[in-house]
Length: 362
Image 1: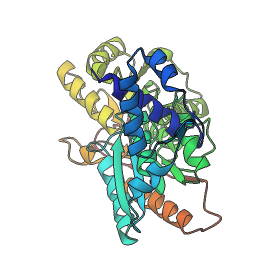
Image 2: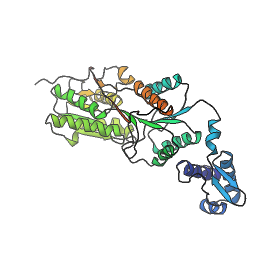
Image 3: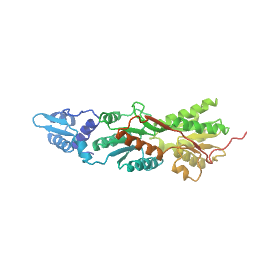
Image 4: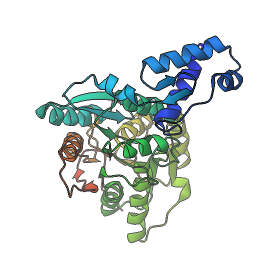
């Protein structure tokens, strides 16, 4: 458990960084804080002293304690090198190392340093990452949103960056409730092309596995539905398996049930991404379902795991390193005062044929 004075520090810091307490505003009195946190005056004073030392507060004798922004100059340390914060959902797996490599490569060219954080697609961890970036005083920020298809409780932090004129851009997705520039794959088109490819091979019973707490999943579902509609194929709700960040670990068990239930009808599946596509391959092997003879599978993102798997997955491209580089370039140009930078950039996916799709024969 955290010491009581640390709880007070964290709460006051959060209020300052999110803009709930504004610059120059007087914070509650020592007596009020004692009452709020049910602690001794000594504990309150310890918290205030530490926050003052860090530059978040300044005390005026006989007047009170006020919000300060000295923490920004303290963390920047007077260095001329600009620092760009990067917050992604994950760092070390799937397509994220490639994206980060693209960002880092471009920042290095102009001698910018990089401050990296990940959220594990968890809003509490995103809050910590945003507070760290604000405390450090980054000059710009590249963010991959957390659970982008759900309401985000950390919007106030993004508004704080806007108020401080710190430019930020989002990659892979964005928060629909914020006016924010972004670089994204055209996820609707990706799933649309995947579904269309299966339809062109004679498949009419096509399922989808979709992750629904991220915007990519919502749009990939949209592309699937669009392609079915154009081909006058019926949408079957029972041929949809959805999951989210929390239920991802149960995906293997849920897939077994889903595939067993739809075994007689389903001939093809559009997968949320390559990771899911390869999980389907794995479960099919356990169930004795032959790929692609009995079931065709398409992944999405053209990830390194698809390239290194023992079966060549049919998939669609994702810009990865190129997107990271473009996002870093956008931030650099913004900080250099360039005007007319794009607010929305969509990359077009292309199909990469593998060995997991088979043409239907009558």
